[in-house]
Image (cartoon, rainbow, N blue to C red; front, side):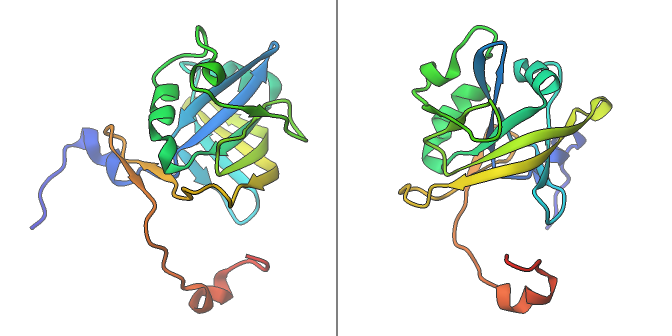
Length: 181
């Protein structure tokens, strides 16, 4: 039987995933923030994240027009929550959380060595009224040797889900998938 859900909680039904870490480098300082509002925009490497001026990293995104999307594994949950609950205005998050910044090839923002994957991105558009930052992926790196390959998904109410079993339907969907996927 269906039960009503209050309007203030509706977004928890559509929380996307995975949770990502977004790194920036501005005025000689690296920073990192946690974001659960992400979106793939099409089959090209075009993405969007949702953030705004309330976030310390937003200024860096506006000024440098670049970042790295780092995808943490489920075993990094407490690190992700810690990053998301403190500010880069007064905290060196790489140091505080024992993360290793690695040199990117196409942007100044650092990769996060401990993550499952890193995507170097260029900001192509900021849709200010909605806090949407549109990004083009320039390069990507994947670490398939990390023991925990599960990604985190935020529900939006302080709870998280880790990826589970995968169901392969590539053959049935082949006509809809872009070449090479």
